Image (cartoon, rainbow, N blue to C red; front, side, top):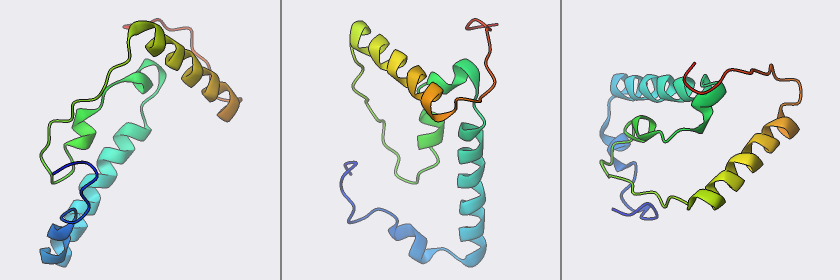
Length: 97
């Protein structure tokens, strides 16, 4: 199944009981909250554990930009945080501290 093949995605939901659906929603909410609550350097990581919450078991192979393009993207991402969250708390912690 490809990422763009919508014909079979989520068909499993039709066969779930109410209790199973509630359990699925709780599992997904927990994953979303864990991702949402990332802060500092944890904002910039590859998140296969989040994708593993989906029922389709695929091994995503992301395209990884070369270093110069990647670093420009990091700088743009950080600048977007300044624009979107101008009052957010700042940290001088280095990665790994």
